[in-house]
Image (cartoon, rainbow, N blue to C red; front, side, top):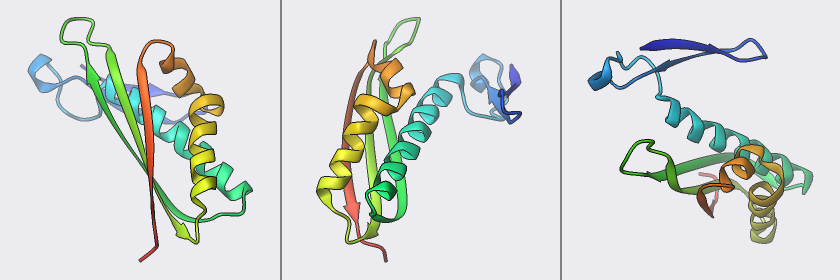
Length: 129
């Protein structure tokens, strides 16, 4: 029940099933990988957009939570994406715009999932320590 998935770019990731169904807990579950892909895709967009807007971002954390159907197939029914953007003198307007552009236009994972899942977003701006 443990597999190594290799991407077109040559990178490998261990994917495993839950122990209760024969997995050994050596890697994320496939549905976790979907959420990780969404978080990574949108984080890249948001940071790129903010850099182009000359915002001094020092960190971006994306926290993705979800709800799934109770019965098989246990598809996602709701996904919430929260961005925690850290930087110097960040413009709230620029952050809101970057999140919106990623969600509505640029993030291909988000756009694909939005066809069948309710996705919500919010953000928090923090000053660097």
